[in-house]
Length: 295
Image (cartoon, rainbow, N blue to C red; front, side, top):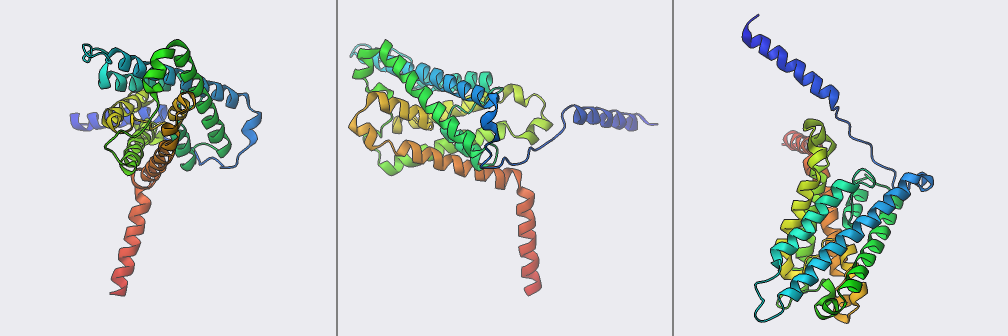
């Protein structure tokens, strides 16, 4: 046997071992109206996990926003505080930590738009998605409540961390920013947690939280000047409830419609283009065959 043939055999054996250790299995779609999980303790553990993760995310991030505005409010202190970069890091790093910490309990959604996208993709039931959104929103409200209790004067003076459209931007521009920003986030979520990718790269489950957090970070850098960056309806709702100003509520629809639209587009894009491309090829091949036979 030649050295080349021996190396090929060794490579094949290693490949077989890897495949056996990390088999590829794409779970079937969940029934949309599945209700059997309502009697399972795991669902309620997951709801508690989503509640606490949303509370921690919103507490840390909104406190960072208020603290930055407070520190940089003085005429001689405009260069103090963490700045937009620090605010973006606060959101992104906290999301990364929380996804890593809670993914084994609830999947680490921490965002109604993510839960909605996973429902659209058939990965969670309608019951679980609705309960997750409720837990996330309640956690966000409690998180902002803690910030307001600790930082009452700065909170009232500096907008309560509530999302609104910056002067100079139209509602359409704000809606587009929220839609595309959420698309980037949910696209990353699907790509980082894809079972097919996990089977190919066994280390992916350990680092999936990192690209998700980085997606949140870069989207905040792009969107903070436009809307303050929502891309998470629970975060926007929590701040709006506690700040409770007319302008905030008047524009609040943007921070639900935009993220849900972007999430749905990302779910369809991932399923149709990135995962089911063979189906697309077959459809195109069939259309070409019909066209050639007609000709």
